[in-house]
Length: 585
Image 1 (cartoon, helix red, strand yellow):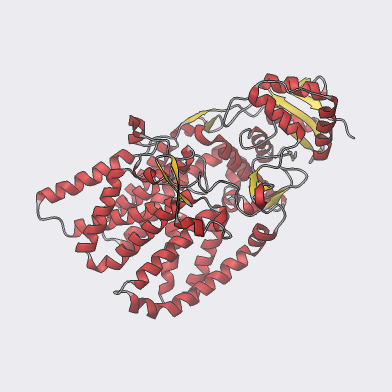
Image 2 (cartoon, one colour):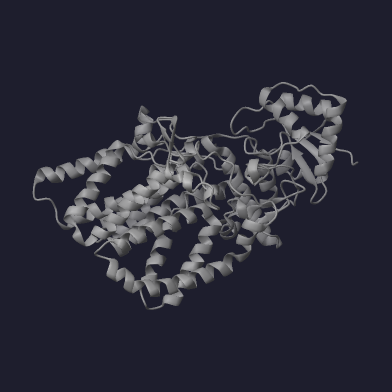
């Protein structure tokens, strides 16, 4: 019991260490590498609580992207988190609630893996802790801690595996099937892509385990009952997810495929031997830029850990015959997902080649075309963690007789794991929500449910507008709607998705001004088109704060003000914003 408590405390301490930059001032700081996703998840938490307390649909909204709305079932809606943490969101606000969930995600992942390992898989508490902490704070998890509340919910994986393996037992098979079905529904609402990867990984692992000569007879005997339990799971999850799945595949504003290039978002082969940026080795200057962005360092194990994993596999294969089928299944699963993570074309140290890889056979399949191949590397970390845990467990049960062997194992673990110790996420101060919003002044200029547009319009690179709306919803000021927004919706090439709606004249001119600092040429024709856009959206007021947060580049507010004035006439000063009223048609 004391060891369990120590594991929980260390898990919380490490999670607090990784997120320490945000804890300095949760409402004023943002994750430097991914402030856009942070703003999006903060908005989801505010909207989810608002939908729950106002009886609105949590999976479709017209509050953004007016007049078409947004299908949140095909986005990462984190519905369960939004509902469970709604009281906290109303109490301390969306930014602080986002930070609480992010921190708890990391800690809960370590604790969940520790419980699965220590209660079901290994005898040594030390072995369970080694495996659990590696998985929870592996390079991929720390990388996705850059604002991804879905991918950092790694505690779902050991939960799903635990309940899946419970279906082997003949007693309580219906109850176990129902429990797993509920867990599947929860996982879908938090991390649908992660659930898909987990299902694939468990399928590959179980197939490899069942085909091992020492396990074929046992697998054949358990299969009928196991399939009956899975049938109960399918019925339960299907009933709970019937509407979300219909909305996902057949609802309004749906799309097929994300629109992200699978070659760009494929893992570089060399990335497996590289070190991540937010690690001890990365801080010492050994990091690389082999990922498309800092949130997608999905492998980055370093050469020492790769060598250690191979040594652990060979050691267990020779010394632990009872686990040979399990070790073989871990190896097969790791290799399969490593190769798939390389995407449709091989890349080496950033250089693309024309060599086709197995993923090219899967890329056009439904569901698969909405996943990023590089993220399949996240499956490899638990396989490595399990190999580490099994090795420590075996060494504890039968210590090496030679002192040199023991020293070599300790040195090997230290050389592989110490460079991967996580460092705090990089954070920076972001522009505050203007007093025009926080004081509720906006209610004097926008009718209930009316449309307000900030400048520039809200998108992934300019997420302020959704932060304003999140503040208004969480503080129960009322509703205002927004044109555009940061979301995935239709409009990409070949029926694929895109970020935000297709651009119109008004938002294109504003983006150009804010990004370049140059006022576009304004003609009578462009004024007519912009007024038509504003009336299409039903905009009542256009608002420009003194400072605008740019997630990828600085925003020139003076160029925005001059462009808006050329289009709409002189603004009026209200609190800390410039405001233009849009006359009705």
